[in-house]
Length: 165
Ligand SMILES: [Zn+2]
Image (cartoon, rainbow, N blue to C red; front, side, top):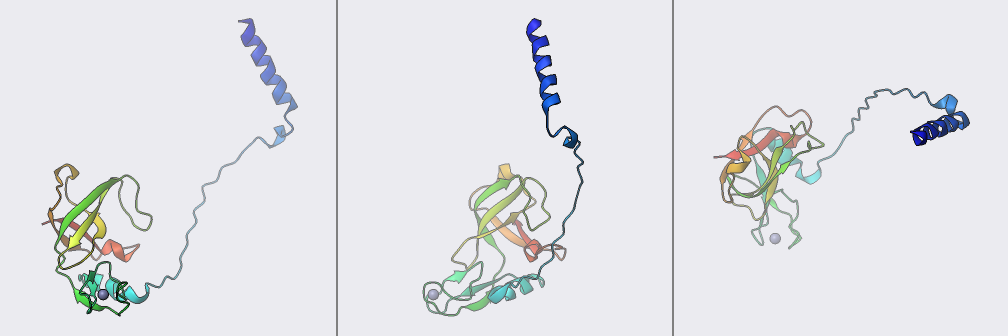
């Protein structure tokens, strides 16, 4: 008991010696900042424009026949300009993860699934949301399809997602 009394006495002494005692009242404000900026989607703009029409476009190198998805303007192997081609939107699930944090550019809910899908006819994997499925039921090789929406408020990548066939 005597120890406690001694400790309280020390705290009082510190407060009395505080040179910032008159500045300890802190006011907190909730501020909202909004940024709007113009961003060019560059040589692959056609991919994003096609999404608005419910189409999934990739690019193909005419020399090595690799099909790039996401699309690339130039084949990195041959350094030749690629050609556009439309995909069926069907694919195979290769990998997935449960994400607890919302995507920075989109309006996502917590605990959404991001999946790597090998779209039919492509030479690479495409990362996108996988919806309308229970994560516990997922298996490698699951057949998926692309689903489009017209409601994308923040980013063109919100115009589509994958879900089981
Ligand atoms: Zn090539």
